[in-house]
Image (cartoon, rainbow, N blue to C red; front, side, top):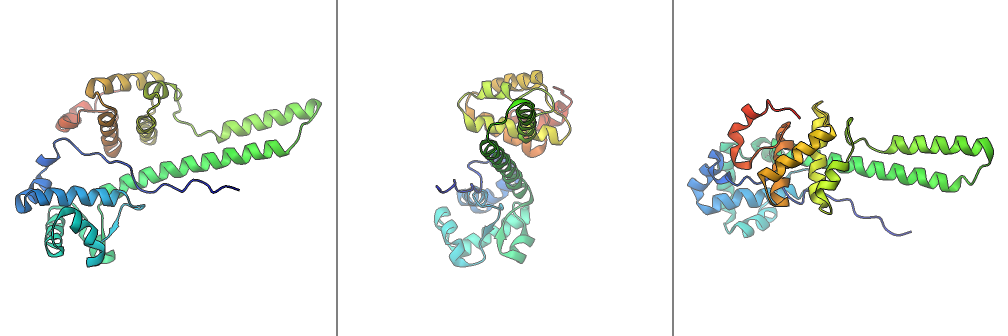
Length: 255
C-alpha cells in the first residue's frame, strides 16, 4: 500500500491590503522602527500563517533566531518591536505571556476556518472511498435485489456528496475559475461563508459575483485577496481592497 498524501498545514497565502501601510497600527510600527517595523509585522505574519494553529512559538532566543535573521534585527530589537506590537494591538500579549506564542484573534480565526474546510473535504473523500470499496466487494446481484441494491448505493453516494449551496450548484464557479484551482477554492470558501451566515447563493447570484470580481480586479491573485477579505469579515458581497471604508453602505446589496 502506498503512502497517502501528507496532510497540509498552514496557509499558502493570506490577504495583504494594498494600502496596509496606511493602517494606523502598522504606521505606528513604521514610525517607531522605520522599514524594519513594517518588515517585522509582515514577515512574522508569513511565519504564523504557515503554522497549523495560527500561532508561532517564540518562547526562546533560539526560536526567534529565524525571524530576527529574516527581519535583519537583533533579538533585543525584535523584543522591543514585539512589545510595541502588543501595545498597538497587532498581536496578543496574553498568548505570549501564557504560552510563549505569537498570534492574534483574527489570524487564528482565519487559519481555523481554512483547516475546518480541509477537514471537511478529507472526510468527504474518505467516505466516498469507503462507499466505493463496499460496492466493489459486494459482487453482482440479480433481479429485484440488484435493483434495490443499486438504488441504495446511489442514495448513499448522494448523501456523501457535500452540498456546496442549498440553491444552484458548483457549475458557475467551476466554469469561471477554469483550471485555476486556487481561485476556485477561494470562490467556494466565499460560498461556504454565505451558507454559514444563512445567505445562500443562487446560480444567478454566483454569476453576479464573478461579474463584479472581473470589474474589481484583473489578476487571479487580486481576486483571491478580495474574496479572502470578504470571507474574513463575513461580507455578503466583494469590494475593492482600497475602498473598505465604503463597505458599510454597500452591504445593503443583495444577490
